[in-house]
Image 1 (cartoon, protein in one colour):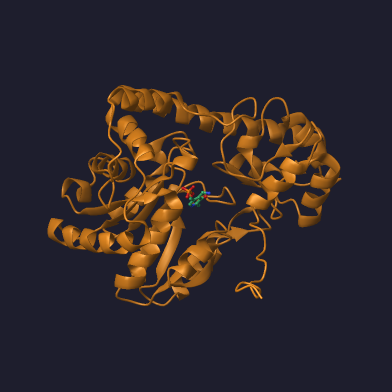
Image 2: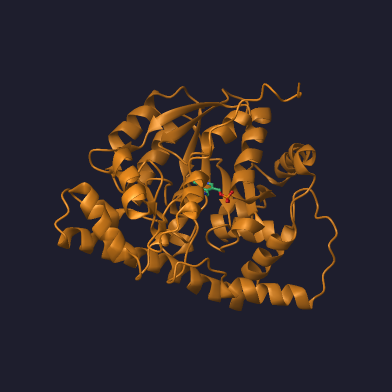
Length: 401
Ligand code: PMP
């Protein structure tokens, strides 16, 4: 008998499973709106020009392949936190941001979970919005935190359940950890307004909650890095000691290069040094030190003004293409007399839209129209383009009617 005879088969990943079904479909009209990766005007993966140029610069300098330090490439992590918090923010100016490079956003969340599990001095419960990115619960559960939920999305309005969110923050035990999506909430595409963020910050302060920001889409929501960092920067300016996970998968298109960072606001440089010494002790037994190439690419772009500028333009272009697809989808659905209210398609933000399509409708779309999306009705707007949007709109219209 095999040692592993009793290992049960696990369920397929709900998002990556969609891609498998898509790949198996031979129909030329097929569309994959499952996975959250940007696609260009022709539905193809997109390597940014700024990334290609950075790679040429790196290549021509003939760098070695030695190990990075445990907390990664300093030129990268320094620039990453500056991008998030802003060059003028007090903790950056005061050298009190502790940071480590991470294996993209997922790795940053995982290090954050592990660090809080080990050192957060109060109850180790983290509250996630309902719904949240599907990987959040397993990441924090595997980090040893208890995972609970707060209200976020209102199915009736297909918008933010702000009253429910506030009620839930008010009834959390003091000092609980709360996870916020910094911008472009996944999967709903629904973000609080700046005014609502201010109220949330006040409530967090009142209840002495501990804010954990997940920023996987800076620049992708509005096309503007500063605007997308509003929530994080507001919290910091209000004196919250935030922790932050950053990913460069989407905004630099570095998905498979796994470039991210995890940072914490500390009291002063001395405390920062202590915290970083413990981050090293968290990271070392997990993977020793992070990968080199992607961090070099990101560091080159972030630190060279002309490349940074080109990157900024490319991020704007990606964000704008997605926004134009939202407009066109909305116009099509309305023009085709599709029953229901579709304003949320335009008001939602970022890569995803929560369409309100039901599970049976998503199933019909896959079987009858070769259109693949997750069962919760989420679509990746980036999978739509001038060639497939009319077919997509007609198919949605048909399945709703
Ligand atoms: N957080 C959220 C909300 C996300 O949507 C994602 C990407 N799907 C991530 C974190 C992390 O992704 P990655 O590990 O590829 O950076």
